[in-house]
Image 1 (tube, rainbow, N blue to C red):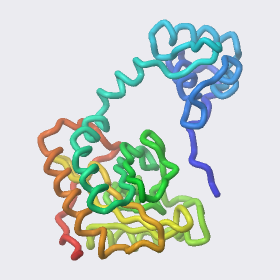
Image 2: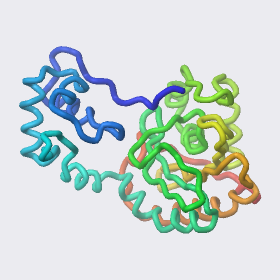
Image 3: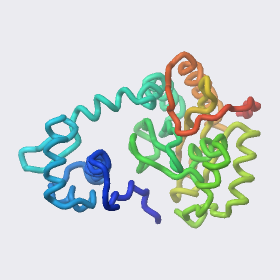
Image 4: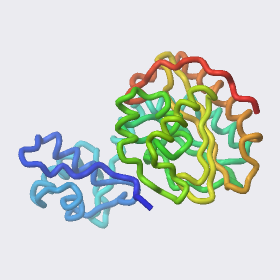
Length: 274
């Protein structure tokens, strides 16, 4: 199964100081929350001496923090700055409705935005009987084979579609990788107003998603995940549609800035029948 990609280390010669500092921060991810100096240097593609200097500067700025065991972790200032980003405003406006959707459906729900050629998970909530998901807030997932990804891709500009469908990765035996078939699915999503995925990204899991709209068009996708054996669209569409409508109303007066890389106008579609 393909692994979710992380930004490649910037190893080209002549990098700027800013680029090198960013490569140090990029060394951290969900699977590498704490790192030694040598690990940071290796993952950032930097000499140890350069990494040592940059890590010291980032610690002084509270962007990194040095632990008692001499390992490093992301500093609290990064979290503070992150709260100023548009996805944080979107999450804050959507959270009460996400909680209601979890209670109503009893399933995992997640909110995602477009981030280049992937979907960025802004929030994920679960109940005691929901389907676990490997994607935490801040993680990325594929566009072509997840329900939230398909919604975002359907409302994306042609250039984004072309890039995402250049070489679609196969995650399971049921992943659709033929660009023509995926494009037909995306056209159907624009008509129906929702997307679905059955075992395309993870075996034994199905998902359904709808768009969240803001003043500039589609700004996010809201999805519900459940085991393949659970009651499917008939039980999920009505509460999902209600939550998507409520979140769209909540963000109508919120300054989301550029919450997606490429927000685009959305044409009205008929609400799917439950």
